[in-house]
Length: 448
Image 1 (cartoon, one colour):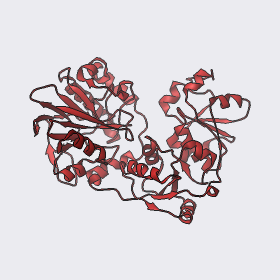
Image 2 (cartoon, helix red, strand yellow; image 1 turned 180 degrees about the horizontal axis):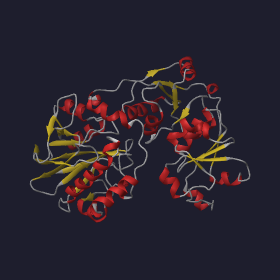
Image 3 (cartoon, helix red, strand yellow; image 1 turned 90 degrees about the vertical axis):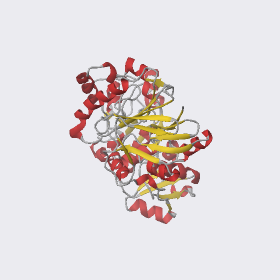
């Protein structure tokens, strides 16, 4: 039995293709099937079954579409309510995929009907595909389904982790979440590793397998961070089978149409590097530099189904950006490729932490747009904490003065600086790594 793990960094997730040399089972595929199909083709195997461990809350599943493309069975918990036909499976059932024996294990917690799949061949070493249940160094969060069920699901998550923890020590563990996904209950060094992990490894250190239930529940609930706003739309889309077909394409906008879109309040998102945006940009637009976090922050900040236009000076950049947005259900955006520098009349200052030090005597308002846990771990004594996802609605609450905006790497600060500049504020984007604060001996505090 071979397991091919496919990184999906744009979602902070992984998908898995497990095969016997002839046929394969795919677990938790993203909407875009290209990487999965390429892996199957390279391995010389046929996709015979596709499974979702749960109805996902963070992305549009590609399982239904992939299964239909290959005439494969689509496995999903029998108790899930969906608007399409699938093979409903229940805990304790054995599913045969070629020479693979696949045991269905009920592991509620991350969602009410979450399941894991334990695959083996000829009694050999098993692999557990745990979805959002037992992760590397943590578990999936339990507050995405219904706030009233959060604690009950946390208790169920502890029990499910213990169920998986009872598997043989050498069982390989292959979670879906926990590699940058906001579906993880907490961040951990283990949760970002790229190496193989086993149940035995987790039994030594995973809080769900070390702590007693009540202590675990308290710790888990206390560690939950913010939920990206678009998450609330993912489960309904997945229950409707939204990922079964291709996404609606973008539609090109002329320069006049782009100008009209800005004037009527469309979200015009500039994909270019944040340094280029600071130097020169179209007034009224927002900087979200294209990268692995692009879709997360566009989906989080742009109101759902609001008019969206993508702006770039390089047409090839549009394809990946549109693919990543389609992965979270955002389709049919407008698009414009810049051709004239005259369009880019907007500008604001950008500096690093050394420049911040040099300007120490100048009056300024420091705005820290990191998340709560980052801020509490250490921040500048005079900083105002305003997480990036709250900038749009709370900008008016900031005091008068020039706004010096920073985060951990400069990426989120670039987004926030553009949002604040769009409101007419004078901003300085501190585009540097937070580690440089310590290196330059800039004072910090953990005081509230």
